[in-house]
Length: 500
Image: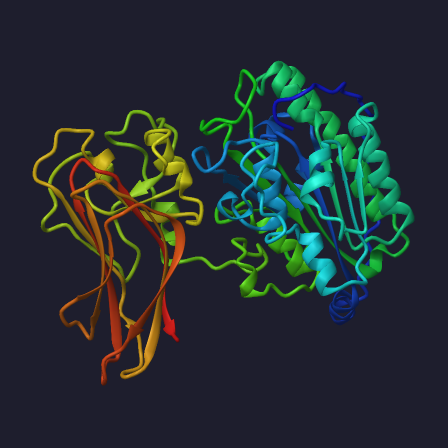
């Protein structure tokens, strides 16, 4: 949890994992059995846990889940959107939307919009009222406020029992009843972070204890008499990170850290992904439970079971370390000027400046936000993995010649002459005059025509522009032209054109 009264840490011994895995009777039998298995979800939230410290700790259960499934490091926002604290973090994980929608901007939950953007169990209950849903938490606001009364059972563990009581209740629920969706929050890693810091032995000890508690829950799942007929998706996640000296709420890379560990539900054993974001946890749970997401809900999450990489993501293996940037860190890999296949960058009018940002660059959240904190780069919440950025502010941090004038040009997309089409892309634009961002479209290699101009701040959004394709046209190309100097930046990601 975030800053507040400390709770006493009650240690419990680690339980060994069971090995109740059914023996396959052959490929066809396995397919038939898998198709008939009942989907169930267990989400365990480890408040304030850092993935890199889990890797350092004695954590056999968590490491086994990582080996058997998916590991996806991810990062949060920062102020002025929301602090890296528990209220915004858990709300984002459990509702499937970012703080600009659910409006949980602190630990007091003042002005929240959880009625419009409820937790995933509430949505599951509305779609499938027969589902058995259960949430238990050591930090009471999760079960008192974020989860709605529509959830079948919500338990806020008494403080005196802390994570021991939370674990006991969760294990009993998993063993003795037939839940379809279970959420459990354990708090003591965050307590250790506040009291001793993430670099401390006490923090590693708290991870070890939590690992044992997770082990008890996983063992309870695997010991179920009906386990062979069930399809369990187990997800482990965290609401924020911690600094080495202790604490969170700020914009440092350590405080902005979160992750998803997922076993089951189609997660590939031993896989590592960089396209998973916080709202994906709720949507992945809904997908596994067979609850169709209505576009009208406005969810930001995407089921990890249904990845949708774009052209820029293919560049991750080609990214390079910093050249002129000094604040990123020598070990951080994260930029290239070489566009993906089919794309191009026109720098014919581009002036000279800092190497990394000379014209449109392709980069990652870690690399880009580490160039300079607290200039709103942390608010680029809807881009995923590798994205394109034109950053006049960072470009001018070295002696410059000329101005910033660069155009990112897409491949030629097939369109149907005389019909409507929709251009969709994720964007984030921070403005300062005389900077300008223009979106232009050309058909069959003709003269580009402006379809959108950015000349004011635009938060991270998914844009959808309707295009009227000229009669006879067969292809369309998109041109993203950014002009300016020592101004701000423009982010582009997930570009596609589809029939309307």
